[in-house]
Length: 539
Image (cartoon, rainbow, N blue to C red; front, side):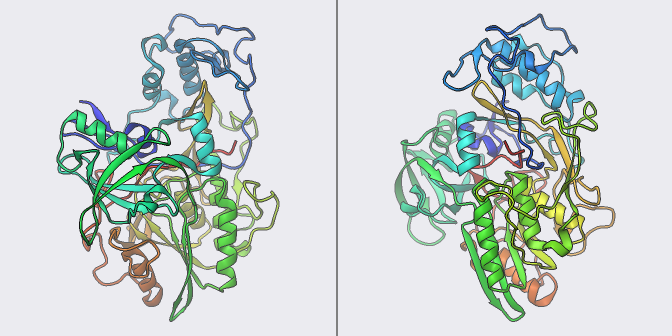
């Protein structure tokens, strides 16, 4: 059966809408992360010193050093890149050796002949196909990016699209595709797209009912344009009001990782609200500015909205966690500690450094602010996290890192994606590969949340990934940051009353609340068109 629905990290290229014949490929987002160590840059000729890689007949279970095949490419890029002329088999030989050296579950990969597959197909096989205790795929985070695209996205937040995040209520007919978030000053914003709008027609195709493969291809191509300059037409049904037709031209959109910072006056004091959408490099300065603003307002509580934050650089998560808790609670404590596979018990196999815990950062790490500058701090005693299945990887690391130092975290929303794992983004021949290479744990040694953190008014004994909080469906009828939006309203009520509001549950779903992107989740997250893939090691 053909897989049409793809993990949302790759959705901008492969699409997320399924036909009646498509099988749902359920996947989360992002990756658990590491610190700020730099990754060695490969040099030209690092394979075998010549112009052709050394290939050999497939010998099941016998693996060469990955460097033998590194940078030997079927289509070398030229310029300043290290590429040398090679073949598809060379690229696959590198993937095979690299995966069996660094993949966290290397002993669960079924060895396959590199000569038998195209490179994209071969990479899809270099992973485990086991399941978590809930029945979800153990590895939902195996994906690639075009290297140029990845570098633009991770460093500056730029990607081709319209500037929207989509929520898919139902991927098969009758479908429901809803606008979850609109990037300010984007093509979508200029065209009048708004949170809660449902897309009912795309380029003349019935986006709700068309079950043909041709219809699916048209829908995916329009929702996830391959480049800037593409024109597509959409028919929208707003939450209220008449149906409207709009035409959009895709563009290189720069996402704002911290689009909303607000101070809300309450009876118990000023409450900060911070919408944080992506752990990209530009988030460092934006978060420092946001914390400065909230500190100047003397906020006594913080509502951190991570519902659509799929991850990014873990150093950013580390900085933010410190700025929330402050030095008295966090300084000198472990934020995250990495574990690689059993081939590398004491040394980081990518950097060569001895494995040691990553402590809470007290200074900037040099993403967009000069390294070594003292971080501001709110010095709070707890944080309210608005969560959902799109809360992944580096976002989950904030929750886990703070809980590891007994800092109170109250979750409002839904279970997170479940990714205590991470990777080094690794380029070969113009493709950047993301394969799980390590797991992370907090100051208490806990990192077992492969099925996500779950908000519960009364956490269950023996379930350490249960977090005190309130299950609340995503409210697509109101803007993010509006005090009447269900999740924020619930957090504010909890601050005032010390408990979840009466009747607070996922069953109190508003008309546009959406079902999940995993079988075990009843209400769910947006599918981002400009998603950043998880918490990755900084290059």
